[in-house]
Amino acid sequence: MKQDFTTIPSIIARHPRKASSLIMILQDIQKEFNYLPEEAMRKTAETLEVPMSKVYSVATFYNAFSLVPRGEKLIRVCVGTACHIRGSKVIREQFENELKIKPGETTPDMKYSLEVVGCVGACAMAPVVMINDKYFGSVKTSRIKQLVGKG
Amino acid sequence: MVNITINGKLVQAYEGEMLLAAIRRENIDIPALCHHEAVEPYGACRLCMVEITKNEWDGWKNHVTSCLYPVEEGLIVNTHTPTVIELRKTILDLFLASSPHSTVIKKLAAEYGITRTSYEEVPDSTDCILCGLCTRICDKMGFSAISAVGRGHGKEIAPPLKEPPPDCVGCLSCAYICPTHYIQFTDNGKERTIWGKKFKLLRCEKTGLPTITEEFAAYLIKHREIPEDYFKINDLSHRRELALKMGQITQWGREA
Image (cartoon, each protein chain N blue to C red):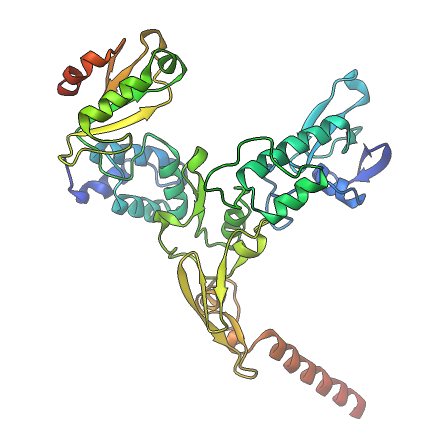
């Protein structure tokens, strides 16, 4: 994982220097570091002349942002209505057992992060699991061990 | 001026003002927890809900938060219809589930005949109803030291990174405006603590009484064009000085 914070100013500089750029900048930072480092949030607040409290408020509001480093592979288990009906609970539990972490946590080796999400817009293939940008549909508990290796 | 009818009475309201202002001017008691004249209306608590209609609406009615609804010519407002009361009861019932220990909520709910919530009480509840008054007043004061953090069930009011807020000057505006008295602070006359941050209080050079925090004084001197020595004495001493001056002027007047 990249931990070179010297790129932060150049990421911020890609956007117009106004308050409305806040979310775009945070998205780019999230993409670069896989989370929002404190330094990056401070630098953004300072550059855009937006109070730090507002940056923190936005950063904690959206699920797309993480304030703690995430693993290389982000596993998102959909627990939206359709997936819930089709058994996302057991899928989630199986991932928890397999990775020995709870949703919102990251494995100590920084390889995997587990998350539960509302709906990923693929209800027809429920229950759905996303690993990074890839979708996996009609997931069965028996497939999970294999899925953890994939993605 | 705009002509509106409130509970059957024809009244005049100022153009651009919100319904709640006109209703309160008529001495009609409707609850509102997230409203304060010092800040912009917000519509968070939903308690100031009223029924509106117009003659030309063919019997169509709507329920709106009066704090956010600007007055309109010909508007007919009813503040205590059975439906409005039912709505308000439901909201209070929900508040009572999320803040079951708040004396303010309990009292208000009791006024509407609710002594116990019909919902499940929220575990580890707080008295914070997330009305946003504290963050709005903090923004208005120019500090923006606190804000809403998180979303949904986990939403709370907190300083950035949940650390003692660097931008806080300890003015206590948030604590004073909090409708449920949730925001706590300590003040022993020497030191003040709020949001986990400690402040030293200045003292009046004449009376020895505590005035405001060092940080607050520094901010006001810098941003509000207040003379640097203004906070060396407290308001009482300022008034005494002024009274002495006025006395002198009167004396000179008599002598002249």
